[in-house]
Image: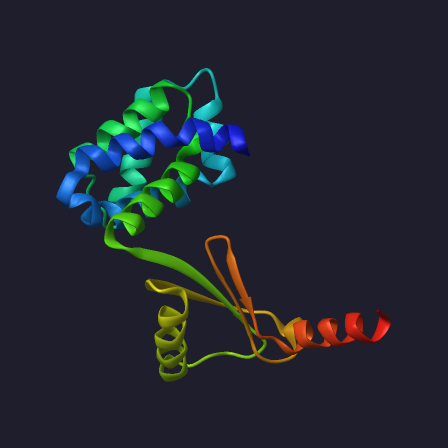
Length: 179
């Protein structure tokens, strides 16, 4: 996947640069188009040599319009360029890198919080406040339920991991007892 990331980076940086102060406003459109581009049937249609690039663009723009999104001219230009260059498969990675650039410029990091049990809104807000102090930056949390953790949470922010789960504690105890 490193190749896909390498292909996506210039597109994401160009969109971010072209958007300037309006980059945050493009987030819903970029995310929606990335979800569309991830659809295998749509990619099969786009990869068909009998289908013109303009047709692929029209189909994508039409689906986006049906979903209530009118494409910003910058997004339209990006989409045309991606389709013309046969890079539609890279659109989800382009979106991920664009969102990472957006977060970095805002001083925010994505945080994946894994928990053995569901976390309600109030609990999540408390956890996020503690984690923001721990990691020293604003966090954009997403929660994933992982019953194997038994209890506690596991948090991944970039390449940093904080694991306070019961599973991790049991593993540490096991290693200490067998050493």
